[in-house]
Amino acid sequence: MVKVGIINVTGYAGVELARLLRRHPEAELVSVTGRSEAGKKLGDVFPHLAQLGLTIEPEVAGSLDIVFSALPQVASAEAVAPLVRGGVKVVDISADFRLKDPQVYETWYKSVHPAPDLLEESVYGLTELNREEVAAASLVANPGCYPTGALLALAPLVQKGLVEHDVIIDSKSGVSGGGRELRRENHYSEVNENVQAYGLDGHRHLPEITQELARMTPQEDGFRVTFVPHLVPMTRGIFTTCYAWPVAGAFSEGKKGQQELAELYREFYKGEPFVKVASAPAQTKQTWGSNDCIVHPVLDRLTGRLVLTSCIDNLVKGAAGQAIQNMNLMFDLPETAGLDYPAIFP
Image 1 (spheres, one colour):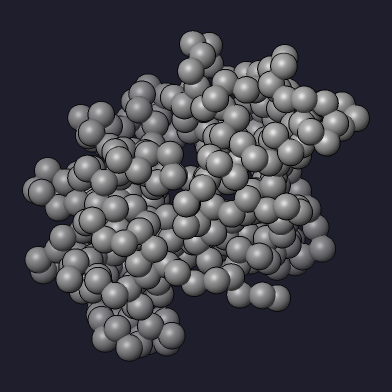
Image 2: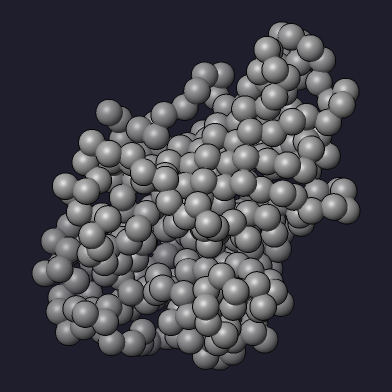
């Protein structure tokens, strides 16, 4: 049985980790922390987790095989660096180990990286694209929620060099993506019956998306990415639409081209337990509470442009579920262990 700790169980990603781990057949959650609620019973703060019988501590304790960190960036690296150096495996849900270049990190996160020596050994934990590396890793950087949906939508085309390197990514997220901390823009009266774009001068997930697209392409030149996130009035979910041009001759015209595109995606994700290639546009409700990513690729018959949509639950496949999927690989467990739940619908 894998002994597990969670740093910052009181945030949305942390409490989702606890919920999913409660039913994991081969992992036991034995230690949880939370700065503002330290000393309280976990069940008093979150009654639905009372059966775990845990107390929220100021620091993780006991003999642990793996620790999940759900702290914000900078604080997360500071907390997990000693654990990694001490031989404990870590999955970091923050952004601290996603970007390989510490200068890029400093530019986007306005802070010197607390543990730059660990950047090289960290593995980007988008399981479907880095399965072997994750399995051998001691430190996994869990992907951001927006990059997860975007990269899974684009990967089959990018890896085979079938798209031009100029991509537009439009994503819409529920309010939980902003975390549990109270901010004016997350108030009910601000979000309800409202849609707003943000990060137009550059969102922090942009360099992550650009980095990973460059890593998966057989071509030498990098990607030019326009990424526009939006906040929409729902609790969970991310709906992403990617627009790209196919390279000349990549697909036939008309229906045959659409069939070729769909077959490319079905073959690329064949056997993947959590990526579903749909024959119709997906909806965020169809992934709510599950670790699934639903992808629907279209070749616009009028313009020849590729329109690629994906849906995820930002707290599961976009955070806690992906983290557990990575843990399963790191300990040679069935990849679906603790995650084989269908979406809650409607």
